[in-house]
Image (tube, rainbow, N blue to C red; front, side, top):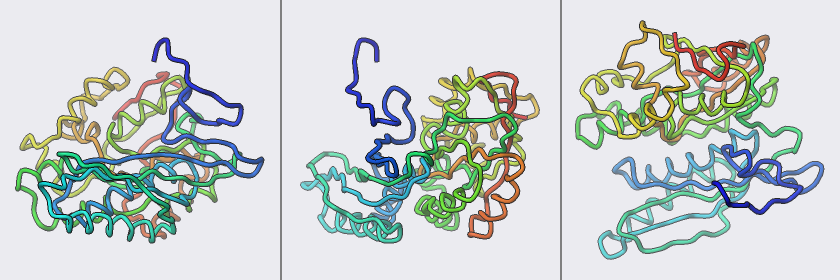
Length: 319
């Protein structure tokens, strides 16, 4: 922001000068803390699952930075006059169950009365200062691995419209509530150079952030990208969130789309995700090994979708 000077510190490793998935502050030569915060309005009707999804989404930024989440604080906005308190109890229970799964300690929180329900977490994690992953360290030849399929934004729109099948509702709910912990653990054994998680900007928006000022480009193969069942059908019905169009308007200048890429698939690539997977840039000689380990850890949809290339610079080529 022009004219605004942000407070700084010599121990701040990742901050607003170079925004990333989370902030990182060096405590000692062997320890840095990662800090992030995220909350949003309900995207599923079940309050318990909403709590799980919101917690998993907030924890994901820590995993994307190569860290381990340790503590969390609840953030709650609740319409106390219009909604039964039992709904909030279920949301909190869902969040707690997800924190317990992640071995994260809840240390407090803050709540306010609001006309619109919101829930999320402020999370602190640990990482070694030499092992921090950011989205800004692509290397030519790296392979790009995505760990979760796309389509949550489109399917959630279908859910809101009462058009989604019970089967896909269950699939997308389970997917959004799943932690990125196993993927983060798998990364530690490989030469991963950059990482981010796919959320509101969609796959192409987050890729655009990775290539910006990198001096390199990326090439992705649309046919290799995993998508959730029924996603293309709902897209064909026009069931797309407003964020899809916003992402396209903002990021399409960084994208070179081949004529062969179906328009519906293009929509999926711009679709805003909730609690999406990790996008991992790993040395090409180790990509197959990492992919095998991800699959062995139960991340069945993980796939190599493209690579880092020298040209065109700071562009995403979709083929």
